Image 1 (cartoon, helix red, strand yellow):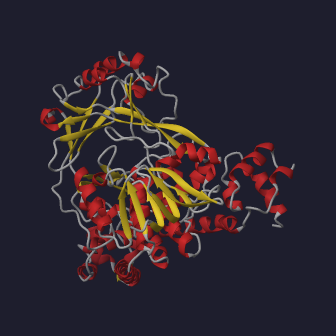
Image 2 (tube, one colour):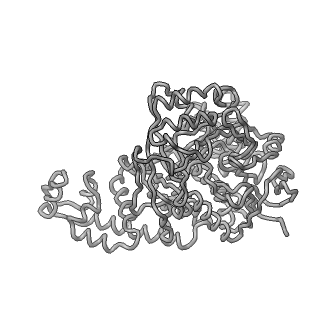
Image 3 (cartoon, helix red, strand yellow):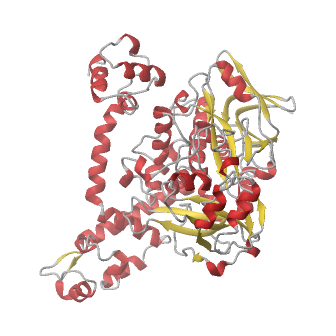
Length: 624
């Protein structure tokens, strides 16, 4: 057997799977190494994909030719578009997935992707020669050679689980940790530290009294994650359920704080501020009498439920007593307790925007080992790392997304420019240009880029071109179709909108906030005929068109601002300035610039501690 590949990907989680599929689909002979072939794409925490800002990332992955949106749609048991009450820049898709089906869909994709091979084993060491990675050595002693390696070890590097005072070595419950790689990379000069995350207990749905809870059903409209017309949501749809902790719950939890790994000194690593454990909540928000819990089904054929909002590393008996004080969970049987996990991660400022490391050529890091949290953030990184690993093997321009291109671009720029002081989670507020980074136009923004590098296939590209043609035709129609007051005033009045005194274009009415294109179609026969003549994906096209029309001025203004700021991104900086010798820079600026070694003036301007005056000094030095 010939163990020679273009790209080796270590880890078959959300980052690893996207990296492997991307490099293989672009033409690289790729090997995916995983500890367990039956847990490819395992959802380690809650059985859901998407959410605020995260849903936008999944749409972007799909638009670029990635797989997460396809897998999620095919395994979906509930879909909702969050933030509908806000503007379209905030709309975020979210889906509950059947955990087992999610794995099966990933296995199908990986098993049928040309150029992609799988090896079940653990990597103990990287082969590094002359500052370049050349392959790996596994626990079985097998030496495998490659031109590039993508490391996506998740929480498995020196993983340690905590349940009260009990400690278990592992990367996930009942799964072994990985050792050797951290020590090797540290000896080379990589900065590493420890992070902590957690997960709640899983409970038996047969022992839950749902009558005491609030049901949350899903939506059944046209929305989904993948832009492909060949992908749909076909599984049985299931409900989630809402309940709350109470003062009795908090009293029970407080009895265990003395034995909590978070408070007795057992855990020293960095934990997530935005997704705290239940014991952290009752300490940090001591004045709150209750906290919402969100029960998520694990699958169509499963009785397992995930208690979102109840992550804990408290002793087992404390967890059980506290759960039994919650309305509807008085008799709940537990499948397994919640736990905290500590693991190694690497300072992401040691990476280029391609996610290649600065210290070792052709070595890429992606996922939680870069200090992020969440399936979506990991998958977005994996996709970019896989694309660039292929490019490094076969030549081409590095593939980098800017902050005005995608949430994925914001994510990676934040990581490599600012680093992390807690597990990084994406929010819409992190994106300066969120009005032009909407979930509805991810295909318009990114599919042409994916097509240009050979990751997007012809079918997806033609789908986009067809959509754009139909959309333009619809926009031209509403901007040119005139309507008289006599034909529309009764409709306007009945919808709480002021009547017309003179005729106007249909476009002017669409700009009114009281109604949209589909509403107007009921009052304007010509528009109704136009919509009925639209091809498949009518609802998607109408919604996207309406957003463009209603927010056209705001979108154009944001694009202009982005273009102005983008000028700084085109001024190269790396290797052109000896920062230590420039005394006109502040001391903090010199230290930060030496550490980060930014690629461009634009990146330098975003480093915490770099002031506008420091940027001006750099521009003067570069003759700008």
